[in-house]
Length: 333
Image (cartoon, rainbow, N blue to C red):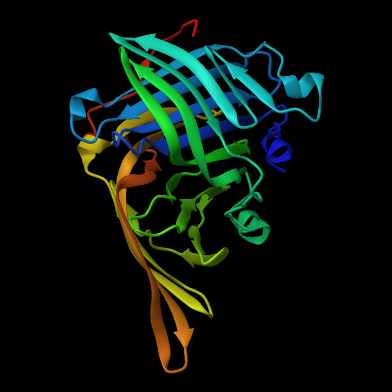
């Protein structure tokens, strides 16, 4: 299932994006790897980004991105049943990513493997996707997995062992206007997981309400929440969670200080720009309630300090976030 749901889907006009997010349990350093492959347009260019987030020394937090030709054929084009996507200096395939980038005195190399085989999660239901225009879809072939491997940054080696991670796949023709996203599979003293996405998109001349989809893994099953609201629940570095279903309620907060964020401009095919403010060392605290006779009763408290992966994005860059992903060159790993 992982293999199938990672295959390119964007077609000629759109683009596919694969990403991996994780936090090293030994050092607390967070990592974000992102590979973008456009469709079959003649002027198509692929890009690869790598970001590192240091929880103790903000000066070590940085991001690199290389852009280059997308002409190299994917394994999927040679074998429809095999997933492999390549970009400048990097590769994504089922359960693996590796690459090397350099710029501005920084050199980053990575070779990471993650466990596959769990069922794919689609955070946004087809009905909600249609309500929002359905121009971009998020699929999570590996929604809450573990990663092992090695990362080398400026000569410093990180031996990654069973780091909580998420591997996702985006595809579509136009990104949302504004969104917030979060994942955590490494809560203090709890084996639960959180997947959260809220977004506003454009349909013609109009903006839709904010469409929110949240899932919590608790006692071996995913509990899902859906919400549509004209008001947004997030601002730069903060997101207030308050959602409910017929059987459960989830409240809490996701946050990251500005020094823990990196800004990466993302251009769409029409020339528009979205500014993504990302952190792989965010924190979260959410409380899960279950409906019982007499009202809701607390059944889980999920707390994370520095092991939540989150981002906040919109059409305006945040001046409070000084670090911007730098142009880089692909290097032989």
